[in-house]
Image (cartoon, rainbow, N blue to C red; front, top):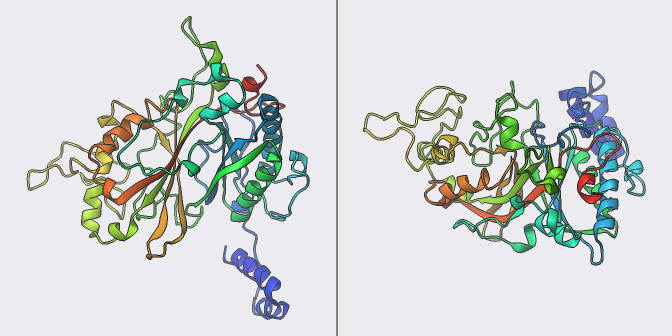
Amino acid sequence: MLGGAGAAGAAGLVLGAAGGATGYAATRPEAPAELTSIGSTEAMFHGKHQPGITTPLQACGHLVAFDLAAGAGRKEAAALMRRWSALAGELMAGRSAGSGGSGGDTGIALDAGPSSLTLTFGFGRTFFDRTGLEARRPAGLDPLPAFSSDHLDSGRSNGDLWVQIGADDALVAFHALRAVQRAAGSAARVRWQMNGFNRTPGATSRPMTARNLMGQVDGTNNPKPADGDFDARIFVPAPSGSTADPTQDWLAGGSYAVVRRIRMLLDDWEQLSVAHQERVIGRRKDTGAPLSGGAESTAMDLDKLGADGKPMIPSNAHARISSPEKNGGAAMLRRPFSYHDGIDPDGTPDAGLLFVCWQADPFRGFVPVQRKLDRGDALSPFIRHESSGVYAVPGGAADGEYVGQRLLES
């Protein structure tokens, strides 16, 4: 790994000063080794579900929403989804963007492998109005209720189309973002775009749950594909029975993504002692274990009392309030990215979480949990929700199909 990092450093020096690069290379006792374990990992585009939902967290991510251009409708949307799907298949296989209809590859990711790249596509509520498909808009795209921690910027919320990009290499991720934007052509324009990151795979001695910018282990209680009810919680089932709505067959195998830009008030958070932070969350900061004892994966004992006779996991702790046990079993698959967009003039970091969660129905997943958090979460004073969107993400495309084809060509 150190050899691969040295190769990257040498390449950077070539761009700045050839003499410096030569001097650096001359000090190396051996040729740099390839980081094949990162670059060669490939996610599949075609399948029952779209990639980027159950795919392991990647190191780099981009979220981008588009609005269809004035005058563009169902025909233009279908052509765009066809282009984007072809493009995604090429890029995720580690090939150039040329065959995806973008008008030639930019060369940004030359020499890189697939690097676990995924592209995931979704439709917002307004997409159905723009394409004349209002009758096929699912109830899951109804507007979310307002929450007290909302300070939403409408310019960075919602959108007709949504694309999630993830990769373990920053250039591969940016290459995909640029290719998607170019392939949109005159059919759609960018409404908003956000950049995120996670810990790079292999940076720890063993696989570990990610940490957020508060330093907390984040994602411990996520549903797991091995769970017997995982698909029922995360993916939309195919219509069945006499009461099924046949207009929703296009969403079978798909999911709903709730996307929230959550600013973390890090200056306030970092003034707390570690013990205070742990009481706010309900888990140990170093291991992620519940304050009731055990390891990270140990189930929380919400009834366990401390020596003072009070619950070891405080009644307003974030982990307690958001637990499925306290929300009628409501669950969602959290798959976020951290973000940092610089320092404000007053020295405050514009940083936090690009929260993305997946569920079969946002009104049985995200909404009930967020309502409870809104009424008394100890974490609320340290966060601010600054943008929001909900997107219906169709099931995966079969070989020869494009994402959303069952909706747009029915």
